[in-house]
Image 1 (spheres, rainbow, N blue to C red):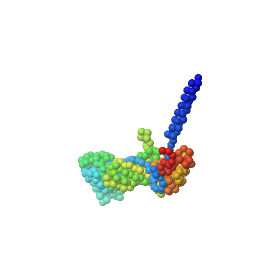
Image 2 (image 1 turned 30 degrees about the horizontal axis):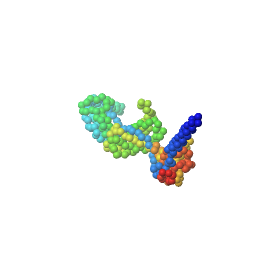
Image 3 (image 1 turned 90 degrees about the vertical axis):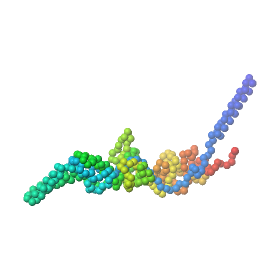
Image 4 (image 1 turned 180 degrees about the vertical axis):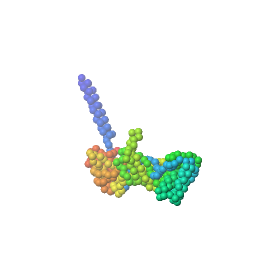
Length: 343
């Protein structure tokens, strides 16, 4: 009996010693050393400039493009231009042979001459109207450029017979271009006509263009369940290499500031509906409530709570310690590890 008691006592002592040793080792092994305040995780607050943009991609088109047609029938008698030609307003591009229109004009011209010699005032007026109508029909056999521009497409050649309304050429005004694009409906509230836009083009690398948002579509479009809003941006300058349909990438500037305090968004702590940063005060940190303004997703404007030159923790969430702002306020220390202690 005595021997059994001795064995039991030994087992209890061994277990107790093992538990004590394990818990002591585990606690030491998992003890977190205080985080350091170093130049790598702090920054000085400074003023700067920032802009918030919305990205969009689209294609460029001339602001004026017209498919040219005749309002009469006939055979093409002459084609005076080629694709790519620059033309002036009023220049005759294509001519038709229409014997009927020519005949009617000659008859009306002769009738007007006779009426002015022998006819009554009403006869003269009637002949004048016939002459004007015949002349308009004859003029319709000559296609004139409605404005100055470039012929981008020519669809007929000499000898072709065409019908009234048939497309024969395409004319663009190459003095101004615009970008047609679509943006996600979630961005609509940020857009305003007149906003400045930065534009780049894959076909013209290195060329930086600017423009203005001139139109926001009045009707949304839905494709495969994605709802977008059509927009138009007028490009401020034209390059000789512009071609209708070239792709363009845009950054629409929806907000910008300058001479404002700006910090990384990672420096911001959100607690109970309020925003804070960890400000370095001497060897410690202190949580300071702030008000923020414009953000571009990476940085944020500080409207109040900090001053230029203040030093703050860059990644507040990672540096924050349990117990809040008053413990080392937070167990942090500047520079290398603390001195003293064992090996």
